[in-house]
Image (cartoon, rainbow, N blue to C red):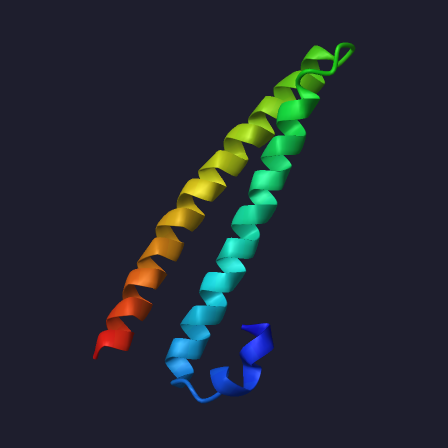
Length: 87
């Protein structure tokens, strides 16, 4: 989108808004995936305390829930934006 900002501005306002929201959600998804990777690696640190291990596992679980919700919302947005482009 960044490279074609002048062409992007020619699109319908609602379409642009939805496209930006989708891109934002994808950025959040990538961030959550990076955090899960960090916490997953953390749980294998040899001297990690039991408390920190539990915290890392809880963070992994919470980020998976976040990913599930973001994927659902993002896929719904994509369906809506696709429907807008057909009309």
